[in-house]
Length: 281
Ligand code: NAD
Image 1 (cartoon, rainbow, N blue to C red):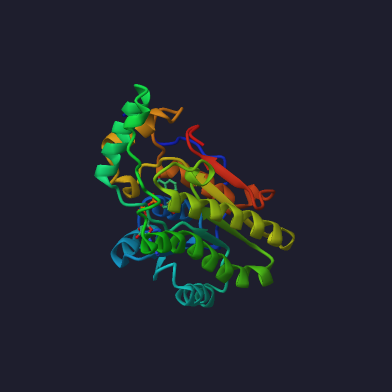
Image 2: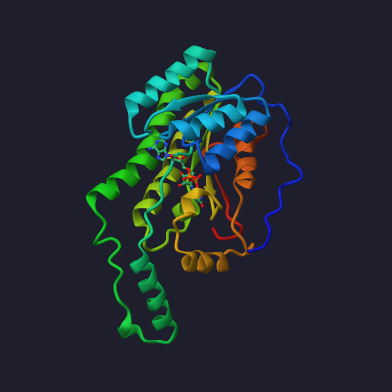
């Protein structure tokens, strides 16, 4: 894989988030941690949510922020923690609904997918073996995937809007995925949850647009974070071959987009959806 070089310039105004309070879910790792670093660099005070107290504490120490340890599927906890942040700081300006999980890698299924691909290329259609990803998906796995992504995004957005609406100000950024725009076989529940986040974003974005609040979504492509760490290397190599840019993305490249959507520079973005996928979307 080619070396990933850090970015050398940004299109946003340094320090533009001074005095603002940003609440970021799943910010103990990967993209969320990169968002925390980026928003803190422009002056925001960050509240780091995660399930992992240690991971959250580490990022909070780095950015001079605070932690809020709870499961985003718990609406009571979400309301309470947003209210606490507002009680402490007198405001909430930014919410990034980022917490997420990936479907577990099933090595047998990956091997079968590769064998199926070979059979397809050789025209041996009768040799294809059905993957049964949907048939074998359990109620529990379906529920958890939809809850973390879709319910979590709803709970967070609702809790933040209760404060942003009277303030007539605020920015919500929802983290969807390219798979919400371009679903792939084998991760139907993930793609469905991420597509739901796009619809939620557009609907709520339209609702609150006249009241000084912006709700937008980002659709990251394949980004180098611990989320993809468990993916089969053969499968990952096959995916990278389909990315026109020729490589995975870096969390800091997504953080630049999220920073733009959180700040005054994106004043005309409302209920809009932005992919950063190296051309994959
Ligand atoms: P990651 O695994 O590095 O980080 C996700 C964080 O969310 C973890 O710290 C985890 O503890 C936390 N989390 C998980 N469930 C939670 C819950 N119920 N409540 C609170 N915290 C929870 O993953 P990442 O790649 O940084 O993913 C962040 C977001 O970006 C996810 O929504 C993911 O679906 C999305 N995304 C990632 C990619 C990618 O290629 N990495 C692509 C598209 C979209």
